[in-house]
Length: 267
Image 1 (tube, rainbow, N blue to C red):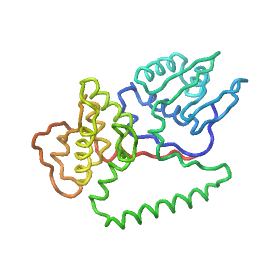
Image 2 (image 1 turned 180 degrees about the horizontal axis):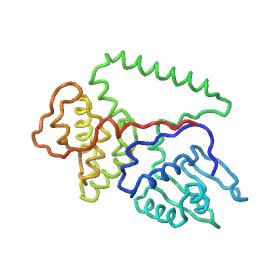
Image 3 (image 1 turned 90 degrees about the vertical axis):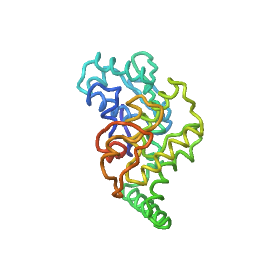
């Protein structure tokens, strides 16, 4: 179960996901993401040669339990729940479990840097600084306006080939839950519905409300779309304005600046 260099992205909202009964289970799932292969690879584990695809890892339930200081039954119960939530799938052969992290590409869309073995950390830092400078220059060319910042919410969605793509800054787990709500209530996953949601998120992002917590709240409430929350109605936003409440509803939730920010885990 060894891992190579590099980093992964993990959303802070993972700790509050409904699939986990406590933070220990959330961190166990994070450990699976950390161990998953970021590219097709071949490894030798317990005397066997195993081929892994991107987003897969080979584990022994007993070894994983020992590594996490848990009993084997605890891991088995967690795996059963993660499979019910379609967060992982597993194939077991002679005591070795190959785990596939569902939607791995959505989690790691931005961390897939394709670093070569010969690239040093210093070279990586230089490249990241250059990329950051290019991003800042692009934002400067756009006038650094709030509208330009808000347009980034839809940037990834517009470039995606998925019919109902996940907006940038939104936890894919929460987005999948929102789509599941729509399917359960027979609300179409159409371009028009997606456009309406994106327009709301763009408008609120211009007022300083990031999209991640808004979508997470809607998914948790079982809604088929996003609504302005009581917290958004009651508190002045980042631009000093208050939102209109006409025709919308919702309830308060945690600080909106926290949940949608991903962080890298250093190698």
